[in-house]
Image 1 (tube, rainbow, N blue to C red):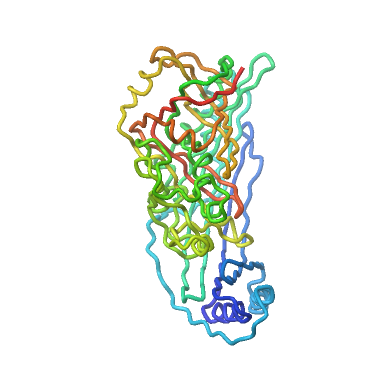
Image 2: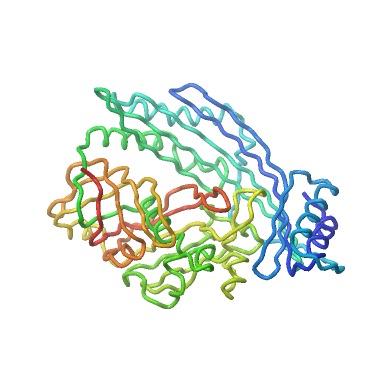
Length: 459
């Protein structure tokens, strides 16, 4: 992508005005996608993104510039712009790079961007057809199948010169159920850090039926009552609660500047003793996994909370300088136009001591959240608001009628303490996380959990 000699030259220029560290990040990414609406191909896309970014550090000050011109002239011009903004000292700095090869623990057998459009469209049609045939109330079905082949190069003034390749595949289907002028939808979108072999274990028809099932459940559901109640949140994408309400507050981007509810709490009890939470970028072929982060640091299994005690944060290179703590392989970015910052990979609450059947049986009255939706959170205060995509009232230890329109409202610190039962069916769900360094693939997860008290919004 960029020869070692040219990378050395660019980095030498970047630190020529006094910066104490510089890095070069380059990428070559091919994306393809096919989307369908009611059985007809709506769009076929195939694009290539190529460019580089150069960042210089002077203590905790950073300067970043990017370019799509990967010629020698374009790259050195980008490096000179960084140097001009970084300082005004003049000195000669020679950078010597040594190539390092990191092991690939996320192999792909069939590169999705090499699959022809017909194969991808046929798989998507299978899923959309299954959704349409699920129930007579299904009025509309849309879906997409995407593949990413993402190759990066990272070089820095500590001598690192390394490349890595990330392959991802995802199918997503949305179904709408309608009756009497009322519409309700359902969505399912599993993805993996692998190629087209994903469809050996994930059947498109199952994806379509799950999306349709959710839509039909919500069409037939009444409205959820509002109030403070006990809530059980199911596994998989239910982990979005921890990701948003607590995970972002554990990222160095907010912790290092004191803009987090979790700043300064290492070693303190911040959660119920049944809660252990982990961010793990090493899980083979998981959606959020990478071999190395976008700063060239190997990812790791990072225990954030252990038995209720805060053990660590997710730390990128800038956060490491600000906090005086080692990096955790958490520096991530959407593409070369973004400066890397601390982000999550696969973040989940680990299995706990409670049997799943006992969690539901323990609830005299409450809400069972089978599928969670999106929401919003303030990392400084931890205040959050999340939609429940599929919910059921619980009475006398039994899951009863479906309800819709529910939301969960609270703070991250409060919900961590109120998780008083943790089940044993850990699973993860696929998502995209947006933050300062763009949109990146992340997994969220947990087993079934019980929150003793939380505010439920409804009617």
